[in-house]
Image (tube, rainbow, N blue to C red; front, side):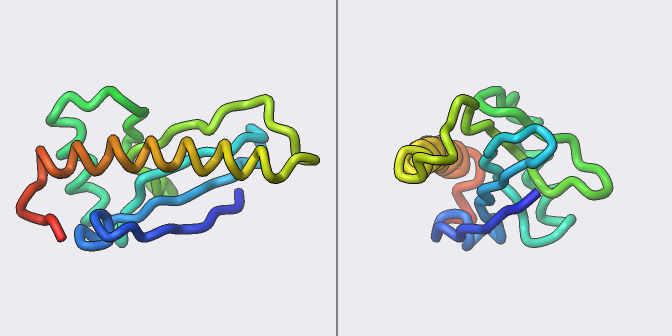
Amino acid sequence: MTCFALFPPALKSRDLKLAVVFDYEAFEFEVWLAARNRKVQRRYWELFRDSGWSRYRLVEPSTGVDAIVEHSVGSGFELDDPEALTAKIELTLAAFLVELERFLETHDPGQAV
């Protein structure tokens, strides 16, 4: 896989980040919520799990797993149309971030920027 990280302020202040990931085996793009380290990952995974989160897929922590929450950008993209692909990733990432920020404002308000 190939990935790159983004650090929006509402996530960075909580030691969280977003990752845009291309999974070669599945041949798809995904967006992930990830953490600075395993301790932070476990804390937020438990927060999402205990809240009954169901908006996006919650990923069970285990060795080699970096995602807390993940979401597929979808299939049917054209590699020969990079502008359309970039727009699709940006829209998916923006919606994902909005949902995560809403959740964190409600369930983890003490950690806000």
